[in-house]
Amino acid sequence: MNTIVKIKLDGTKMVAIDQHGQEVKGIIYGTRKSALNRGMALMQTDGGWKSCDMSGYTLAVEEASAPVVPAGIPAEQQEVMNMIHSSYSLKPKSLMLSELKWKYLIRSAVRGKNIMMAGPAGCGKTMAAKALVNALDRPEYYFNLGATQDPRATLIGNVTFDREKGTAFSESLFVKAIQTPNAIILMDELSRAHPDAWNILMTVLDEGQRYLRLDEAEDQATIRVADGVTFIATANVGNQYTATRVMDKALLDRFTIIEMDTLDATQEFDLLHMLFPLVDSKALEGIGEIAALSRQEAGNEVPRIDSGISTRTSVAVASLMFDGFTLAEASEITIYPQYSQDGGVDSERTFMKQLVQKYCDDGSVEDLFNTEEVVSEEA
Image 1 (tube, helix red, strand yellow):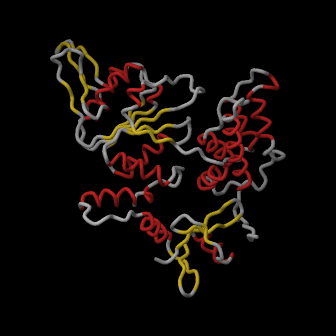
Image 2 (cartoon, rainbow, N blue to C red):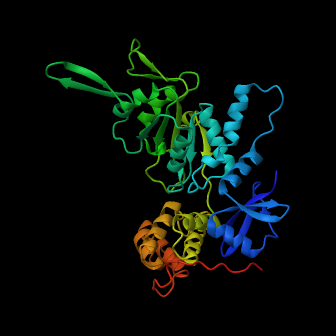
Image 3 (cartoon, rainbow, N blue to C red):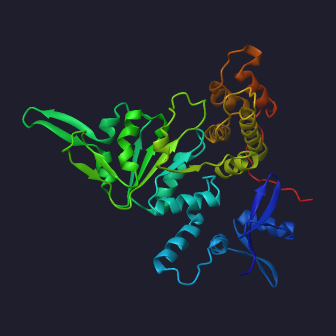
């Protein structure tokens, strides 16, 4: 197959990336700039590099990543493997998840595994789960277990009283969900759920049981989990999440755990630039670097802050700048309230203010929007 590349910005440089994810050099500046401006890919031919539709690049990536299927593999297995390894094009561009983890996510769902998306708040766990639902086009049910005050009512149901009909049991939506073949059931914020919810879910999630008991009585009927049902949970990790609970090891063992990727400054910039292409690239680079440095500091042995800035916060800052706020103003609204003022000049908030200040201009919003971005020639 011919080499085919897409052009992406890396700071002020235009980089050509082939279908194998490798950088390709030697493509002249004008050709790269033209392809970037028109949203086109480039294909290598005998006559040089020619523009082609971006779908051609996507197809080339899928073919390059397709597994070599040994002879004798059943057709059904081949179909599953092809689906898994050609699924990367279904991942939303705004979801910053590696190709390997995305394929693992798809594979786990196809194989009916219980999946737990783990990572800090604001890193895209719920987005990843919903992207999976959209990619597989299966029935979806959503339950925020971190917000429920009555786990039994949410997961099993309520006893209601009617003057004419008397006492009756009303099943929960969760009972309906687990009886829906091939459904994807998203259980958000499982790490914040009440332990009663975990106890109820033990038999539901166990591969050898897969049932829900409506009552503790021995003769009480049980609800079987339908074929093909996939459970996806999200969980925050880290001591800074005070409302989370230490999850039962037996419950964790019932999940395939996928950790969300931690973005570096360049990846954070790529995401922000894709979401807000009109905001000054230098400003977006600053947001990315602030986020990356804050996460680095939070991971130090003796950190000056307990947690770094989440990607959700970075997006909020960029969106405010899109609406005409300065970086200093956006930080005042979104970043600083997350950090304690205790300790005066040694406080977490003071540290974050000092970090942000390094990237602030004089407060003007002049040239905030790039209506005609200038990309310099590569060295």
